[in-house]
Length: 137
Image (tube, rainbow, N blue to C red; front, side, top):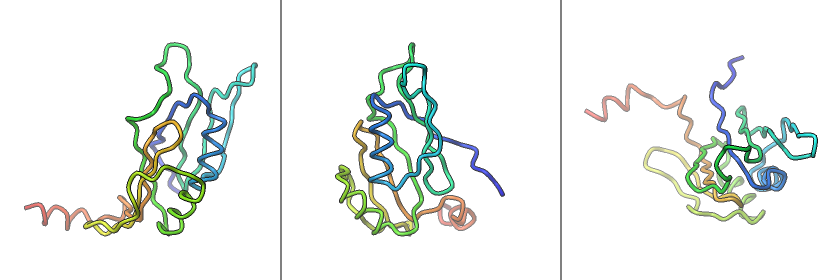
């Protein structure tokens, strides 16, 4: 088994609410939660497919959490069903479900703290790099 080697990490002002939202709207599964002595979530992980997104509270010396410049792409099998779930859970849809010219079907949504999440059927590891190189010439 080959494990992923890159893990996005986000800071949230309210990581508990963020985890609840990611589970409800995007189908994430809680993986780990580590708390400080006062109960603050210092570090947590949620699974999406075979990947993990790490998250936690802002730490002393780090910038405030408020998202907005972060974007995460997640490969999904059924973009239509995933879109329906996110919409029904109240996710702010920022790009409606669509087919792209590179063969993906997907959409984008913003979480409650402003981070942009992109979901689609495009799988970068399966993309034919040789065809891409030839097309670029």
